[in-house]
Amino acid sequence: MEVLFYIAAAVTFLATLRVITHVHPVHALLYLVVALIALALIFYLLGAQFAAALEIIIYGGAIMVLFIFVVMLLGPLAVEQERTWMTPTAWVGPSILALILLGEVGYLIAVGDHTVNVVAETRQKGISIALYGPYIIGVELASMLLLPGLIGAYHLGRRLSREGR
Amino acid sequence: MLSTPALVLAIMLFGLGLIGLLSRRNILYMLLSLEIMLNAAALAFIAGGARWGQIDGEIMFLFILTLAAAEVSVALGIVLQLSHRFRTLDADAFCELKG
Image: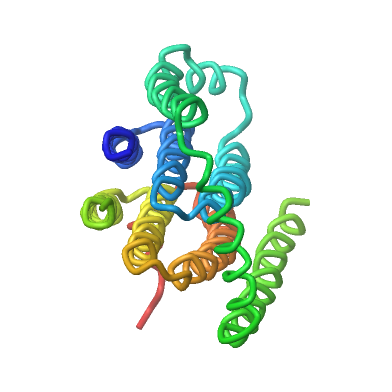
């Protein structure tokens, strides 16, 4: 388990380092997706299975898709630009890091202990009960945060589309 | 016990995000660095929860996730507006506030 953790930590660190040093936004986003998936594996190794799933679904899925949409919206969508952004060499680094992670997950599936799942179930139940028990004020505050976020994003996007016409 | 190395990794990731935020002037990369720093904070919470065997760390992770989602949606709207008005993403170009 410790070896798996250190490999995933190295992958996270390298990918994050490439994010902040890269010039092309799309390449940086590819590396950030790899870093988030590696971080999800670390969450799993720390015993937070639900957090690992959320990290992949919401961070690696929803938030990164938002970023990629905005990057695509920013520049003119020229074929030439796509060609310079998506060169084959751009895939090599993230692919190698992702393959390392895939090997770790395969190893975990093959030889990992499956008694963890039973513990995770009761733990998940505890999270749900605590979320709507002592932490109910936090849930309410999160909903109060999300509604202005929704309105703000709608407002900013709407003015842009009206001016564009 | 994996909590201490996880905390060290969280510190390193936070440092990388801070360096990126301070050194890059492209507003998109500044947002990415903010995401990295939020992730590092989430990792610290998860490591703390794993150390004490409590579920509070994961609950704080849920709240950080909500915060990040709201922050990203608004911030990317602002990025679109800025690139539409100024035709650049350089953070130093947005200096028209008078005060």
